Each structure stands twice: as C-alpha cells, then as structure tokens.
Length: 244
Image 1 (tube, rainbow, N blue to C red):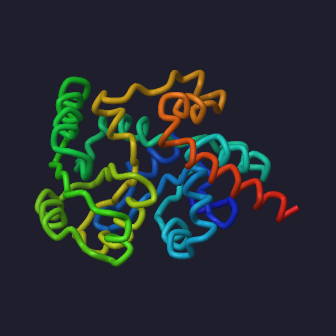
Image 2 (image 1 turned 180 degrees about the vertical axis):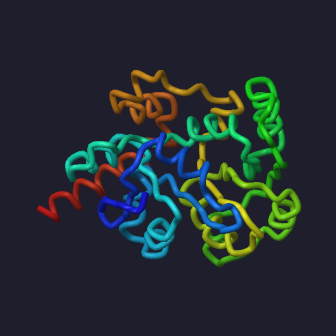
Image 3 (image 1 turned 180 degrees about the horizontal axis):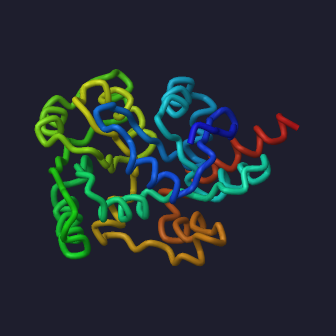
C-alpha cells in the first residue's frame, strides 16, 4: 500500500478496493489519520493550491477516484489499480466489526442514511453522527475547528469517521481536525452521503466501468457541473501539453 504514482503532482496510491478493505481491517486505530478521494477536479485544483496538494500527498491513503487516475496508473505500469469508490468502500466496511461515525450534510439526510444502514446492515456498529453548520472552504483554510463536533467524535470513540462534505472543503477539514481526534481515521467521501441516503441515484455500473460517470452526472446537473468540468479538462489538457 506504500507504492504511489504521480498524477500531475498528486501522489495516488497504486491500489484497488479489495486492498483498501484489507488495509483498513488491519489498521491500528489508535493512530489517527485521514484518507482522501481526489477526483480529476481536485487534482486540477491542486495545480494552483500548494496547501491542497500537500494535504492530499500527506494522507494515509490518497485513492484513485475515477477513470482518469486509473488510466494514468495503467500507463505507468500498475495493472492492479482500479477506482476506489467511497460508496462501495463504506458498504463493505459496514459488514465488519469496525465502528462508524458520520460527519456532514443535514440531520435529515444523515437520519436517512442511518435508517438505510439499519435495514441493510443490521449488525453495523454506528457510533454516532453530527451535522455541523455550513461553513465556506475559507473557514477550514484558516484552520478553524468545529469544537463541538470534535468533542462528540471523541466521546463516540469510532474507528472510521465518514466525512460527507464537498471536495476539496472536506480535505481541508480533515487536515485541520485530525490532530484533535483521540483515535480513528477520517475518510473524505463527499457526495457519497447523497447516495447512501437515497436522495440521489447512483449511475448504473456499466456507465461507471465505461468511464462515463462524469457524463451521467453532467446531464443531470449541467448548471453546477458544467463550469467545474470545463475547468478540470482545460487544466489537465494544458498540463499534458506542457509536459510533452
């Protein structure tokens, strides 16, 4: 799990879902840390943000999230690499004896997640949840702390803290908060909370395997995702031509 490959300055672990599940089953949760899931838009943002790039590169794991990172890995000779979905990772670990805490989104949405977990994973160990007040990314850049949420997490004493806040805001949050935890690992899974709650339908698996999840999402949310995808494509294409 220590091997990483370079994706325009972001060091991604050369791994897959099965290896990450095994790693987290064996991890010593007395050691705090955080795990990042940077998609191509976060990699593009990291080109102009040294702090974000450092945060990604200093995570316990920085996982391949999406076809572009998977393809880059294959081009570099890492045949075992495949996309690690926060959604499927969470579902697999809910069947384990690890304990879970959910941080983010609204209380209504988190309650939907807990109800879904109770129905699908009746033996899952859910230690708690909290829905912090909305904060802009600058709040976490300034290293402000959600003191009440930290206190609740430390009282719950979970192994895994699932952070459902948009990227890269969640990466700054994890970076500033991980040192305040008594134990456990934070995982920045972003929009996965929407899928776990049932508020948003996941794309069919064949679309994901074909690398067209971005198009599925763009058709559903063109106003929000159009500018984001344009910035990502433009930035990565410019970097590719500059490199060549």
